[in-house]
Image 1 (cartoon, helix red, strand yellow):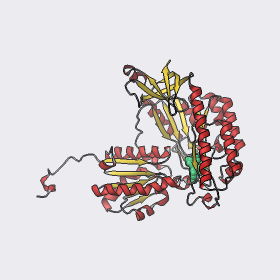
Image 2: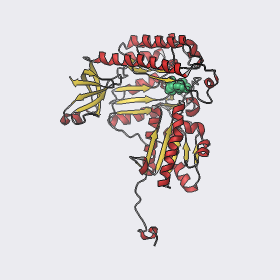
Image 3: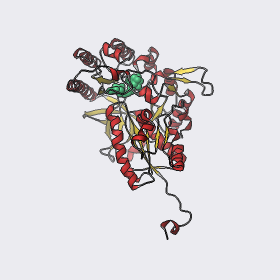
Amino acid sequence: MTEKTSRPAVQPAAPQKVFVRTFGCQMNEYDSDKMVDILGARQGMQIAQTPEEADVFLLNTCSVREKAQAKVFSDLGRARELKKLNPNLIIGVGGCVASQEGEAIIERAPYVDIVFGPQTLHRLPELIEARRRTQKPQVDIRFPEIEKFDHLPPARTEGPTAFVSIMEGCSKYCSFCVVPYTRGTEISRPLEDVITEIAELAEKGVREITLLGQNVNAYLGAIDAADPQADQSDFTTLLELVSEIEGIERIRYTTSHPREFSQRLIEAYGRLPKLVSHVHLPVQSGSDRILSAMKRGYTALEYKSIIRRLRKVRPDVALSTDIIIGFPGETETDFAATMALVNEIGFDTSYSFIYSPRPGTPAADLPDDTPKATKLERLQELQSAIEANARRISDAMVGTEQRILFEGPSKKNPTEALQGRTENNRVVNVEVPLARQAQLIGRLCAVRIVQAYPHSLRGALI
Ligand code: SAH
Ligand code: F3S
């Protein structure tokens, strides 16, 4: 007798499990959560703790720099080994590499079962089903407007903070960047959908919302979803409405772009106390020559003017940024201009990268004769300046009173301390006896900072 016929006719099927490995930006982190949500809601799938126990293994890929892109195929090689152990395993590739490469992924790695893009992840259940039914790999990397959001289940919440996507894609076409090609042009979600989602999250206990998008301040959403041609709301109006939602106490957003950082948005910092005193505003370079070659659409002076006006309405605002080192043709003088800007503004915890030529982008064709070693030296110099600044800001916080949103038990000392974040996004560990912890999680509390460490702060309840 074969094993099959020896079993009862109907066996209760164990729930299938999905494992998602994520690379790249917060938009990808968000999308990965949505993949799990939709497979859970539509197919009852659960999260696998390890790739080995997964029935569906998904790679959510990033192509913003070459290194991230190169990782995909080495990771797929490892996934192939998993398939030897479990021949029914479905291997899926999503995200920006999938969007760029499409069919080519299957040609190079024929054991991949499905390829889907950032705008088609809501079709995962159908793609998996079609793969199983037809025994053929499935590829869907279209940009079907913004239908994704109409097919997603209500957001799950874990604790008092949540991310909400308000727009997708980018229409800026900076000369170095692949995002407009992999994620499509800017499309905003209708205003009422965003507000309804945030109100529901607030009802479930969420206190801090991070509005997500490649260029959130380019937001232009239909006020009435049924009539997208009628009136539209800009980002500032959206912020005003989110501010009025009962229960929401803090509003963050990422990423914004200097080109659309309007005076109206700056003034919102004067009247909306729920907007945190922290802005991440990518500058990329301090040299006008390089900014122009990057097609960023602003000068260093214009960038500094935004910061000056912002500080006028919110003197305590913390600023962070993204910087690219070694863009083609970057000279010592250009680099010095970047260093001068960094020192003048006094950025907090910023991200800096060496320029990575991306196939298909205009900058990839520019002559680039700066030696790699010079670029590395410049990056080191920049990063030490940025780190010194972050350290200086942390040290200056010692002795001050900060409002902390308690998110949960401290990672290092879960029974005796809680962990929360300041407005400028620093983790603070605060001693709280176990008996009082549940009462404080999800609450904003005043805390005195007593010590600064390289990656966190210690505080005491006031
Ligand atoms: N929307 C954001 C950026 C999204 S990409 C903006 O307004 O700038 C995230 C960051 O990756 C960018 O800010 C940039 O610093 C970096 N980046 C993008 N393309 C890159 C490339 N080809 N090489 C190196 N860094 C890059
Ligand atoms: Fe990329 Fe520039 Fe848009 S960096 S995401 S093209 S604003």
